[in-house]
Amino acid sequence: METPPFEHDFNLRDLSRGGAEVRVEARGDDLLRIAAWAGVRGMESFGATVELRKHSATRFALDALLEADVVQDCVVTLDPVRDHISRPVHRELHLSETVRLKSHESIPLGAGAGHDEVPEEIDSLIYDLAAPLLEEFVLALDPYPRAPGVEFAASAGAEARPESPFAVLKSLKSRG
Image (cartoon, rainbow, N blue to C red; front, top):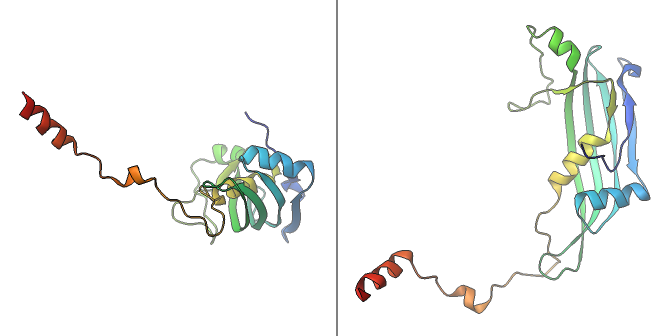
């Protein structure tokens, strides 16, 4: 299992019914490790204020707004392309030991859960708050970043229509 580039552990056991607000922010070497892990040129900032709520001793909710400033290589010119990512993060967390012991009980989802979302099972009350932020960060990265004003232009030979496989077969038949 790969070591995460950045971690911020929180003991959910210490969470009161009133919840908690925790600032998770990468700095210095953490930013360098995140950039290398994500395969980008650089990271200028990465952070979120995470709101945690306790529904029961084994059920928790996490909400955050991820904010990150990233530098990627332009896919056309390889010039640096700066981008700001702002992405909401939501997770419903359930302690898996309890889920296994009480498998006959159904677990209701929170109001923020979608139809295709299922609670994230956790096996410890020590939870890495950075993990869902890193997941959402890599999902938000532009897979084909381009510098402003840069357009991809196909070469002149690429514009020619490729010969149909049926035309090739027809030419073979006419030769024989």
